[in-house]
Image (cartoon, rainbow, N blue to C red; front, side):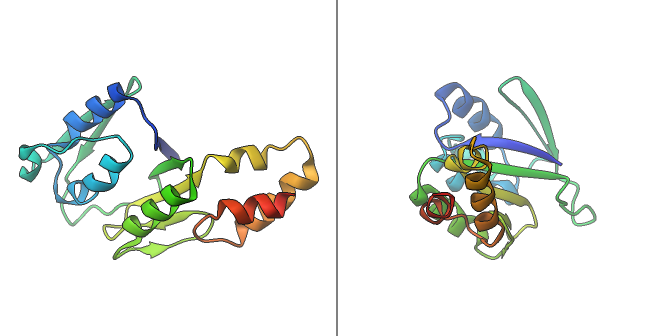
Length: 160
């Protein structure tokens, strides 16, 4: 599975490149522009109302092409987006916005109302799961496996 990591604190050069591509986004992507703007990854322009068949963008040297294939082509988990969040407030924000009209999954995964898969992950999670103490890492993993939206405080408490 390919996951495009979209860090919540992305730099201005990434913001500009993604913003340039997404300001011409079709309806499915433009619905998420506010969420992406909050992550510092896009800037909305007047042209955001256009509905082209293709979007080309480059993020940190990786080129992406998104095609508007119409209703015959559905999203799958083969392509997903991951948003890394420094705070629980960010986790809560992205989770609530992206699940509107969509569905919650396990372990921070969700599908938005268009069927696109996202994982909203606190930056603390990899640190907890890679703890040099295997028992602490296992406790964090067990706690995560019970969650839908990830809860930083609960993960840290479980690992302690």
